[in-house]
Image (cartoon, rainbow, N blue to C red; front, top):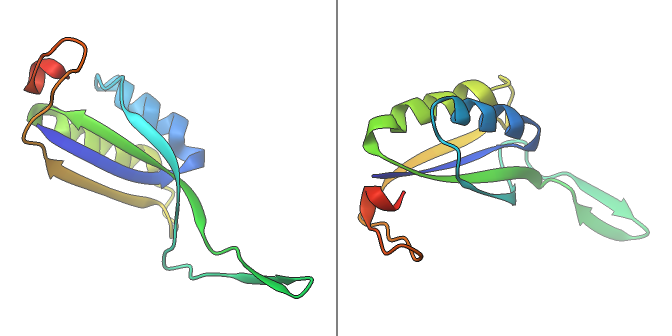
Length: 112
């Protein structure tokens, strides 16, 4: 089993969601996150106070999946989220030792 964490542009969310749905991934967790990257931080001075506007709003997706479709999921995210510009995001794939369903008591792949 694998866990995929992907940081993507908010504007690409619907495209990524549709691409994942096409390969059978219809459930995942996502959250709004902010990051700091190669663009560096921009600062604005307003009424004598310095504000950092260099943080970039993004979405973080967390997907649990079987080993059989992890490569397809990564390719779906990459193709749907790519603009070719700095800040398109990152994808991290990690091994998962155990998964437990709280409601059913199922474990591992049957818990997905």
